[in-house]
Length: 114
Ligand code: SF4
Image 1 (cartoon, rainbow, N blue to C red):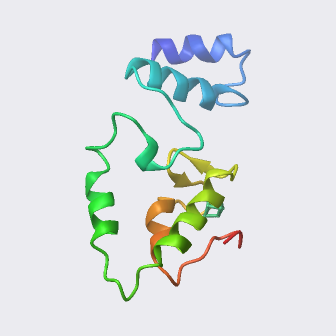
Image 2: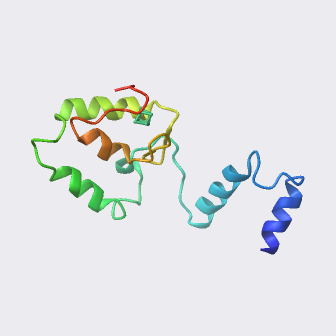
Image 3: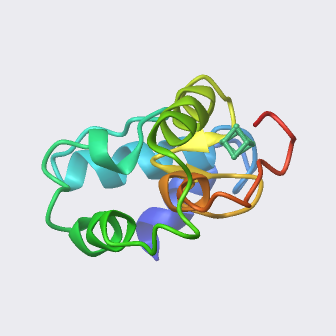
């Protein structure tokens, strides 16, 4: 609480305004000694393999009738990798893990990028 008040003062009274969220994320990353990757898929996050294992297993074992073909899936993910809305494997527009969203053949990008 005290450090939050100090941070607020150092922020010139801007509180959670410009830059505050970014600093919080950076501090959390530093405290966990891990790197934040803005445009990574979950499968690209080194050291997080165990955390995302159930997601990857689910995609791997998805019913072939609903699963997107592999080439379509990879094309979709390559579009997401270039998108400003991708943050740590998650789409900031829809809140989905993009690897899961892209794996379902009938799904689409909320911004119609794929
Ligand atoms: S689903 Fe669409 S909006 Fe979301 S990260 Fe991928 S390309 Fe961007």
